[in-house]
Length: 494
Image (cartoon, rainbow, N blue to C red; front, side, top):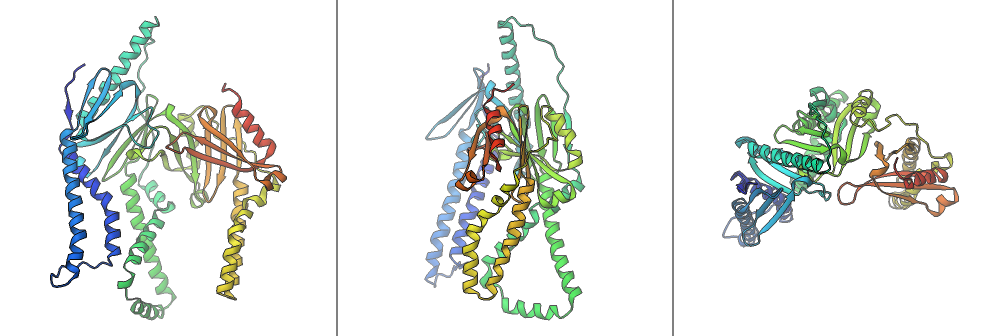
């Protein structure tokens, strides 16, 4: 095979530099806030030199980051040799990585603003051993033609190797026509608006505004604002309500814009036993998931979406996600429950999507909320002591805690269907966790002293996803039901 060596595009130096700057934002803000926003450049003031030192350090770090980006681009080369994709980079310390073609599972792509300006793409190479949240190799910036060539060479060599193995085993290969790509799911503008309205984006916007305001609290004239608000309230209920409505409308618009940028043109395509997910407006991303690398499926319904009949679907995958760090990949960010069964049944025909669940026994009901009393009682006692008598009203918090516990009790359940285990539970959102027996890495039973007295056991399932794995818990089940699950897991897969 040709040993021609290929280099990254020079833009990769800029991309690495900008990425380094992004990593410096939080430390810089911490330093800035810790200094009380005081940046004085008056040489006659003694604080001038004390301000100059951290700024000089910051500029030095930025310069080092720029030089590091240039060195990485200058030394980074990749080539194909002996059925491997080989990578080498580094100036003082040479780093080499050889990846056999048959170990490569998928190529994930990302197009940031700099990439799109020059028609480039970032390629993340995922292998069968990429389970720690990071891709095996990242090609920061190469042309789309070069990216296609890497993928074509990999597929070609893998096919040639399969044909050689078949000939060696004297097996006549059966000719089959390649499957055409088909769109499984595509989000439109209406879906994006509903997604933003029913997701946590609005809460993130409000929290972000609150965080920024808290940093500038000492500069905000609260007395003047309070006086103005007091005058404003005198205008009447209608005006105040209108102002609150405008505030929430602004928050909603910002949340919609954020969602639109992140999930624009969200499309799921199935082709040749692989799922390809693309999304993004400013930064286009594409991730490929081999179906045989999917470990479990999670159907999540937050209370608002559950009320209106919507859900989101994520897959726990042994492959990397967008950016190589998220192992739970969103398959359907938003989909109507009535439209959910058909695409899931089409992609995963081995699963039963409407199982009959076995519920916890009635005697387990109080186990869903009484553990919260352990930390609530001291909090209520402190509130009562410091703010008596109004602090006694804190006892009312028991009411929502009990109601949430009863809600969790009614949600919890499990079902066994041949080689499939389904677990449903909730903290606030209802989660349906579906997994095949062969994908389960660990099945653990837990029983406290009080559960033992009531003949109740909790189970936890772990599948391979990231460093710690993905977990699902079926709390407070009947002892016999828990034993059935354990016995089912110990049996060999059919």
